[in-house]
Amino acid sequence: MDDRAPISVLLLARDETRDLEELIPALAFAREVVVVWDPRGDTATRAAAERLGARVHERAFDGFGPQRSFALSRCVQPWVLWLDADERLDAAAVAAVLRAASEPPNPATHHRVSRATWFLGRRIRYCGWQRETLVRLFRRDRARFDDAPVHEQVTVDGAQGDPLAGTIEHWSYRTFEDCVAKCVRYAHAGAEKAWRRGRRAGALDVLVRPPLRFLRQYVLQLGIMDGAHGLVLCGFAAAQVFLKYADLWQRTRAGTRA
Image (cartoon, rainbow, N blue to C red; front, side, top):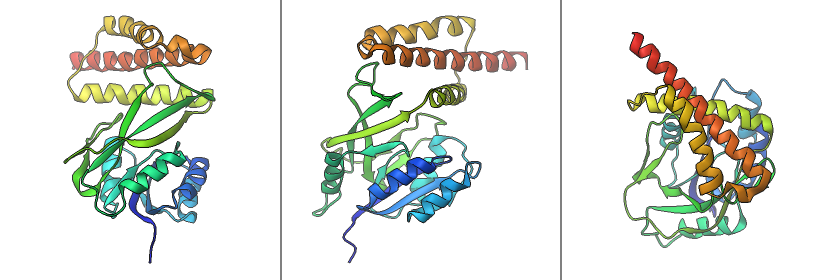
């Protein structure tokens, strides 16, 4: 008899060999781990996922929303736990997930979990990242992802249950190189998302929006309380906004000329 919880863990991967080698063994409580791998990535990532017992599906990445929708379609357990490869559940969160997915049937269809993000080796407590809670455990047959290229959202029909105890520890920005790469990638994806929604940008957006983002996160959202790490993080946030609106401005100009 399989005494693991009736949970499919949903993961996306491309070049996350080290992360998967840390994460997948810690998910032994779930009946399956579903990894959707982008074939443009390192084949060692796929090999690691398969070696560790995950079910791996190959699909070229075309945005986080479509990729997660595909992954969800490959899950078979009644509950789905959505994680990123650089996230870890603490012990309290594991216990809470197991309780929520256990018998007798939970009347709720989805639950939120708190998340704490680490930036260059320090846990960020302000900068607008405080009190972040996300829907990460949900009924498979009641959920759907939108098609956003970045910052995708899951919609779940039915009643939301109590927030789960514990924390998801998010190790998204381990090195300076990680910060730069994600700043550029998310800026481009953000511009694509805005363009699809009919947004346009002028030179004033490029000039004004980055410093406003910095002031909001560093002053209003108390990034100053995170010391030098808060200063650097808010600087990267402003740079990402600059790149996003520069990209959108160029798209707007090209569209106007056309």
